[in-house]
Length: 165
Image 1: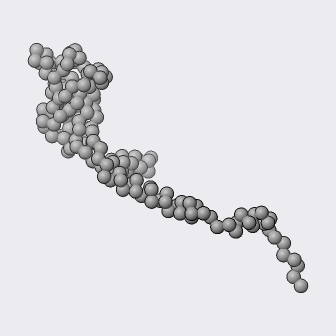
Image 2: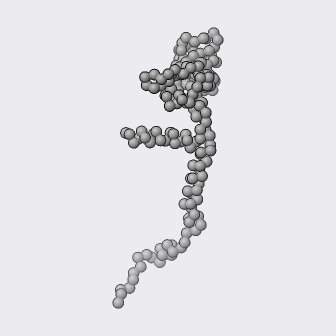
Protein backbone atom coordinates (compact mmCIF):
# COMPACT_ATOMS: atom_id res chain seq x y z
CA UNK A 1 0.00 0.00 0.00
CA UNK A 2 1.10 3.44 -0.78
CA UNK A 3 1.24 6.04 1.91
CA UNK A 4 -1.37 8.80 1.49
CA UNK A 5 -0.20 11.50 -0.85
CA UNK A 6 0.47 14.75 0.92
CA UNK A 7 -0.20 17.91 -0.94
CA UNK A 8 2.78 20.23 -1.23
CA UNK A 9 0.48 23.19 -1.87
CA UNK A 10 -2.42 24.51 0.05
CA UNK A 11 -5.87 24.40 -1.46
CA UNK A 12 -5.84 28.20 -1.96
CA UNK A 13 -2.51 28.07 -3.77
CA UNK A 14 -3.76 25.26 -6.02
CA UNK A 15 -6.78 27.37 -6.95
CA UNK A 16 -4.56 30.34 -7.88
CA UNK A 17 -2.23 28.18 -9.96
CA UNK A 18 -5.07 26.42 -11.77
CA UNK A 19 -6.74 29.66 -12.95
CA UNK A 20 -5.79 30.54 -16.53
CA UNK A 21 -4.37 34.07 -17.01
CA UNK A 22 -6.52 36.68 -18.71
CA UNK A 23 -6.11 38.18 -22.16
CA UNK A 24 -3.75 40.99 -21.07
CA UNK A 25 -1.38 38.62 -19.28
CA UNK A 26 -1.39 36.14 -22.17
CA UNK A 27 -0.79 38.77 -24.84
CA UNK A 28 1.09 41.34 -22.75
CA UNK A 29 4.60 40.27 -23.78
CA UNK A 30 3.63 40.18 -27.45
CA UNK A 31 2.05 43.64 -27.24
CA UNK A 32 5.13 45.06 -25.47
CA UNK A 33 7.43 43.52 -28.08
CA UNK A 34 5.27 44.98 -30.86
CA UNK A 35 5.43 48.46 -29.28
CA UNK A 36 9.23 48.32 -28.93
CA UNK A 37 9.75 47.10 -32.52
CA UNK A 38 7.33 49.75 -33.84
CA UNK A 39 9.19 52.48 -31.92
CA UNK A 40 12.53 51.34 -33.35
CA UNK A 41 11.11 51.28 -36.88
CA UNK A 42 9.56 54.71 -36.37
CA UNK A 43 12.97 56.19 -35.45
CA UNK A 44 14.21 55.16 -38.90
CA UNK A 45 11.75 57.63 -40.46
CA UNK A 46 12.18 60.58 -38.07
CA UNK A 47 14.78 63.02 -39.43
CA UNK A 48 16.91 65.18 -37.11
CA UNK A 49 19.52 67.81 -37.99
CA UNK A 50 23.11 66.64 -38.01
CA UNK A 51 25.23 69.40 -36.48
CA UNK A 52 28.95 69.77 -35.83
CA UNK A 53 29.56 71.92 -32.75
CA UNK A 54 33.00 73.43 -32.25
CA UNK A 55 34.83 76.36 -30.68
CA UNK A 56 36.26 78.98 -33.01
CA UNK A 57 39.02 81.49 -32.45
CA UNK A 58 38.22 84.96 -33.76
CA UNK A 59 41.27 86.78 -35.06
CA UNK A 60 42.08 90.25 -33.75
CA UNK A 61 42.93 91.35 -37.28
CA UNK A 62 39.41 91.67 -38.55
CA UNK A 63 37.76 94.14 -40.85
CA UNK A 64 35.98 96.00 -38.05
CA UNK A 65 35.03 98.89 -40.30
CA UNK A 66 32.86 96.60 -42.43
CA UNK A 67 31.72 94.52 -39.46
CA UNK A 68 33.13 91.33 -40.98
CA UNK A 69 35.07 89.07 -38.63
CA UNK A 70 37.21 86.06 -39.41
CA UNK A 71 37.78 83.03 -37.26
CA UNK A 72 39.10 79.51 -37.55
CA UNK A 73 38.53 76.14 -35.99
CA UNK A 74 39.75 72.57 -36.40
CA UNK A 75 37.39 69.76 -37.31
CA UNK A 76 38.20 66.02 -37.26
CA UNK A 77 38.58 64.33 -40.63
CA UNK A 78 35.44 62.20 -40.18
CA UNK A 79 33.25 65.26 -39.67
CA UNK A 80 35.05 67.42 -42.25
CA UNK A 81 33.89 65.26 -45.15
CA UNK A 82 30.35 66.55 -44.50
CA UNK A 83 31.17 70.26 -44.85
CA UNK A 84 32.02 72.42 -47.86
CA UNK A 85 33.04 75.95 -48.67
CA UNK A 86 30.17 78.44 -48.67
CA UNK A 87 28.18 76.41 -46.14
CA UNK A 88 26.31 78.32 -43.42
CA UNK A 89 27.63 78.44 -39.86
CA UNK A 90 25.82 79.75 -36.80
CA UNK A 91 28.26 81.57 -34.52
CA UNK A 92 27.48 82.32 -30.86
CA UNK A 93 29.73 85.02 -29.45
CA UNK A 94 30.30 85.37 -25.69
CA UNK A 95 27.59 82.79 -24.89
CA UNK A 96 24.81 85.30 -25.69
CA UNK A 97 22.46 82.81 -27.29
CA UNK A 98 19.47 85.14 -27.33
CA UNK A 99 21.14 88.03 -29.14
CA UNK A 100 24.71 86.96 -29.85
CA UNK A 101 23.98 84.40 -32.57
CA UNK A 102 24.98 85.43 -36.05
CA UNK A 103 25.21 83.62 -39.35
CA UNK A 104 28.53 83.13 -41.10
CA UNK A 105 29.95 81.08 -43.95
CA UNK A 106 32.85 78.71 -44.39
CA UNK A 107 35.47 80.54 -46.44
CA UNK A 108 38.00 77.76 -46.85
CA UNK A 109 38.96 74.31 -45.65
CA UNK A 110 42.67 73.59 -45.32
CA UNK A 111 44.28 70.17 -45.69
CA UNK A 112 44.71 68.01 -42.60
CA UNK A 113 47.42 68.92 -40.14
CA UNK A 114 49.61 66.45 -38.28
CA UNK A 115 46.72 65.10 -36.21
CA UNK A 116 44.35 64.64 -39.21
CA UNK A 117 42.22 67.67 -38.28
CA UNK A 118 41.11 70.10 -40.98
CA UNK A 119 41.46 73.83 -40.40
CA UNK A 120 38.23 75.61 -41.33
CA UNK A 121 38.19 79.39 -41.84
CA UNK A 122 34.90 81.12 -41.09
CA UNK A 123 33.77 84.69 -41.79
CA UNK A 124 30.74 86.35 -40.24
CA UNK A 125 29.16 89.71 -39.58
CA UNK A 126 29.07 90.68 -35.93
CA UNK A 127 26.16 92.39 -34.28
CA UNK A 128 28.58 94.37 -32.14
CA UNK A 129 29.46 91.65 -29.63
CA UNK A 130 33.01 90.98 -30.77
CA UNK A 131 35.77 93.04 -29.22
CA UNK A 132 39.25 92.20 -30.47
CA UNK A 133 40.56 88.64 -30.31
CA UNK A 134 38.12 86.29 -28.62
CA UNK A 135 36.56 82.87 -28.92
CA UNK A 136 33.06 81.76 -29.82
CA UNK A 137 31.03 78.65 -30.45
CA UNK A 138 30.01 77.54 -33.91
CA UNK A 139 27.36 75.12 -35.12
CA UNK A 140 27.63 73.78 -38.66
CA UNK A 141 24.47 72.07 -39.92
CA UNK A 142 25.57 69.27 -42.25
CA UNK A 143 22.13 68.04 -43.24
CA UNK A 144 19.67 65.60 -41.75
CA UNK A 145 19.85 61.96 -40.80
CA UNK A 146 17.44 59.49 -39.27
CA UNK A 147 17.14 59.34 -35.51
CA UNK A 148 17.97 55.61 -35.63
CA UNK A 149 21.21 56.31 -37.53
CA UNK A 150 22.18 59.07 -35.11
CA UNK A 151 21.54 56.83 -32.10
CA UNK A 152 23.64 53.97 -33.49
CA UNK A 153 26.52 56.19 -34.64
CA UNK A 154 26.72 57.59 -31.10
CA UNK A 155 26.30 54.21 -29.37
CA UNK A 156 28.74 52.12 -31.39
CA UNK A 157 31.86 54.27 -30.79
CA UNK A 158 31.13 54.54 -27.07
CA UNK A 159 30.62 50.76 -26.90
CA UNK A 160 33.93 50.18 -28.70
CA UNK A 161 35.73 52.57 -26.32
CA UNK A 162 34.40 50.64 -23.29
CA UNK A 163 35.65 47.36 -24.75
CA UNK A 164 39.13 48.78 -25.39
CA UNK A 165 39.51 50.02 -21.80
